[in-house]
Amino acid sequence: MSLVNDIEHDSQVELVIMDFWLVTVLSAKISQNVAQFIFMQNPSFKGSIAKY
Image (cartoon, rainbow, N blue to C red; front, side):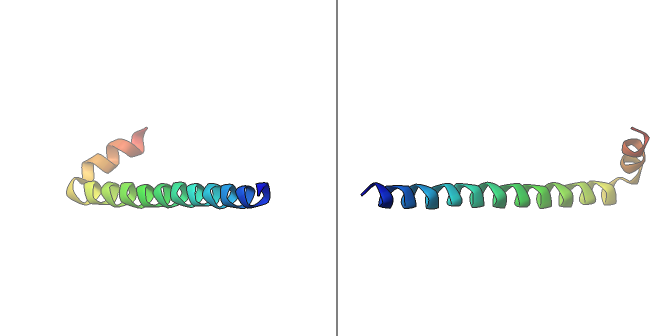
């Protein structure tokens, strides 16, 4: 019985890790797209970031 519980717990942890990874990748892609969009709309904005 405890073995089955351990297996279920492991698969739940893996699912959480996968979800976290997916969210991280998706948010990185979204922020990248937003940044590219801002740069295309406003070239001087890119220059002000480059100074920092």
